[in-house]
Length: 336
Ligand code: HEM
Image (cartoon, rainbow, N blue to C red; front, side, top):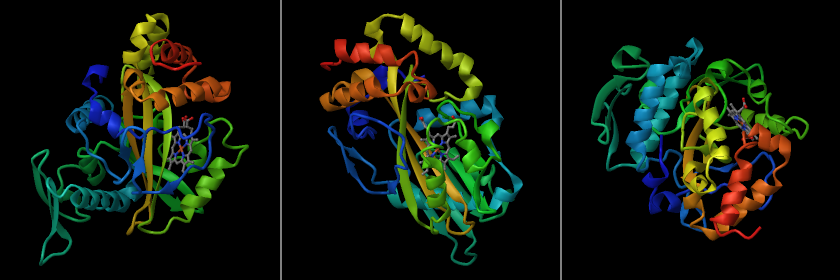
């Protein structure tokens, strides 16, 4: 569990605050990846893969979750080439963006052989691309042990995208084990409104046309109690009761216990396999920290107050929206 006390100024300055208007509705909200975004507190967005202060904690958390529930990491057999492609793409990103600690070197004689060094984790491995016997684990598991992002790989065939591989330990109220092998349209089946408004079919058409090497991003958000990264369907008995204890507990505690959860999601067409790589990076910030930025507290209040019931219920805010609004207006400096 991440507690509010472990958050610092840097977390606020780099927080990808996701709300750009006082009213939030679903849309096909995609924009090119890699463009820096300024916020009222600082900025974010110059990299597709982000390493921050929580690196070790989140990787430990991922390892703990996987040890308990291996269904969170799966790769259907036909996705092996995509998994290698994903690993190499992520290594190249890391080596470019973090040259002081991440290094990828290609062998001068055998150009399928690479040396990978991650100084943050003391990793120094040499592998042959496509040869599973040269890595300690499968390529997707290997690289997901070194990044904070969750990953889903989508195969494109028969004019559709299929979620056929991934490592997802920090799902926001869904189950990767249930969704594996489903089409993009099936995966979004439970989301209200998006079908009548054609948001998902438009997103699907957009993704089908992504060119190799192109990448886009979008954000999504919800509220999470007690800073839990793992709010997958499988662990609902653990995190579901937190919502009740928050709603029944003292209002003063809400600023420390309730977190704005933002996902920065990247959509990347992999260059060799043609698969689409979907990265989901989860950022948590307690309301007490959100409220240090006046415009964020005010914006969150307006959005929560306005959010239609079906969207609030789907986002799992039925019990937490009321306490969030009361805390923001009582302690967070917001005038209703
Ligand atoms: C442009 C691309 C995309 C758009 C516009 C989009 C849109 C959405 C929206 C609006 C929601 C509801 C979120 C909420 O209320 O908090 C959602 C949920 C979800 N999305 Fe996407 N999405 C996109 C890409 C993807 C991709 C590539 C995957 C890959 C697996 C994915 C997997 C999911 C899952 C698993 C859920 C939760 C569904 C559930 O409740 O079971 N999305 N998406």
